[in-house]
Amino acid sequence: MPCKNVLKTDVEDCYYHIYARGHNRKPIFREDYDYHVFLKLLKRYLSEKPEQDESGREYPNLHSGLELLSYCLMPNHFHLLIYQINQGTMTKLMRCVMSSYSRYFNKKYKTSGPLFETRFKASLIDNDAYLMHISRYIHLNPGDWQAYKYSSVHAYFGIGESDWMRPQRIIDLFGSAPIYADFLDDYKDYKKSLNEIKTSLADK
Image (cartoon, rainbow, N blue to C red; front, top):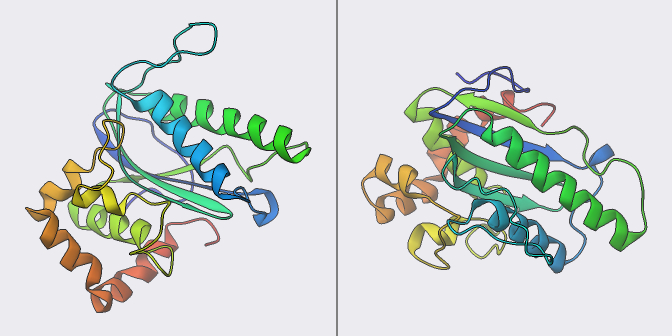
């Protein structure tokens, strides 16, 4: 069973389920472009090749320290499943992404104050069975998950592949992408695991 609700440990070579939601459950994504900005920020820090700002200065490159395995962006919250290779990389990534996105959002919508309810929350995942179920939970978050644009599910089947989104560790647990697809479709089994997953999320 993972640690609940908050990041209590930050260790290398471990899986984490990261999640955060809007302050007072308000939307953090209002338009399609907002989702794209958030994804571009993940790409900025996780691409294999370092990216640069307008002045030619390189952004922190975290590709070698962390793998993004799954994600889903919902109107008022997001989920990430990551494998942390180097201690502290997860915290560095979330600080960079969430602070940059908050500045973008507040400037665009002329708002102020915190966008997110908390900095972020993370649960350490310590067994393969739970890891499988968390991956499915993330991908099945939207009701129309098969057509949903702002999750990583399509990358599992070779659509929109990139070097900053790396699902192979999850696919390897199942042996192949088609077997993983069958796992996603097994709604009866998913319902059995749902309550256990929800107890590990703060007030979900």
